[in-house]
Image (cartoon, rainbow, N blue to C red; front, side, top):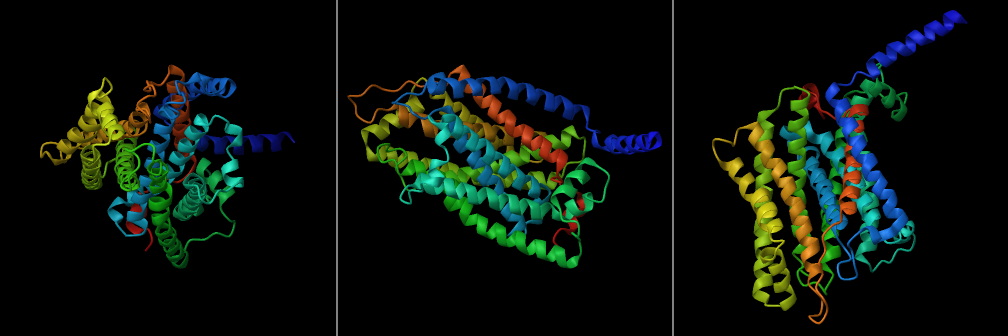
Length: 430
């Protein structure tokens, strides 16, 4: 018995030697996120106990920071997924290094987005009512069901994208190997036929997901706003299209920034050609987005509708106009476009990283400017104007939710074969 115990201990020790080998930087990163999540978690619990009294929301401005973050993360998800379709559906293999990361990012961002919605619900215990009691005439009810189908499709597609790596990992004595054994079949194999089959299903699912992401997920999110006739700045058929294009901007920027930062932290070589190409794609989407926004503002101004003009004035000429001019336009558009097109910075990885990060920040400004200015302006001039600003409690809840998402992604990368290797990039699907 003693010898058996020693043998078992040695075996478990030999396994744990591989399982616990994580870098110091990763440990610091996880510790910081855990602290942020615990602090935010305290305010999340308080929010559920005290209700929306912890916020500055009112009957005049019923939506605030949490809804702005909700549409921001839905956009990140849709944009990340649509970028993955360029790889798996349209065969743009130069971006394959971020293929599985794009799918996993899309799933995590949806989890974060729906958590923000949960925070905003006055009666969160009724969250399942939209599914159980489906009002087929409600865009919001349709959107909830689109989200469920979309998340399921993402999970299946990610599994197929990882299947080959999971089968390999299941044969190893590692933490990823242990997880792989739990989620793969014992008789799973890798050969030319299975590779061709997986490649076919990736293309089929990606093709199905394109209209789902465009029309159902982020276009549908834009539709929730566009059908609100009482808010003229939302009530336009162009709004869902702007949401989709903006999602492509933010999703591409996020994946570009994550790829560069991860490679720098891990001290691994960076694929400069892919980075430069992604940066140009990112700015291309941004220019289209700016064009759509320009016409949206122009038509609103020419329409001479009082509420629409008041909304534009609130966004561009009030004490909170810094969010539009500095965050949305300067940081989120002018500086990144300059970096990508200026010869001295167009090939510089650090400069392109800065451009990607600035665009992500700029899109946050876009989301706040979509949600808040139209709600500050009263529906009738006789009513008082809104004066919303997020409370410290709202910000801390937001920190906790975002930290939760980053923890899920970080542990996902630790436990799953998310990162593409050079060999996979060269031979995937062939």
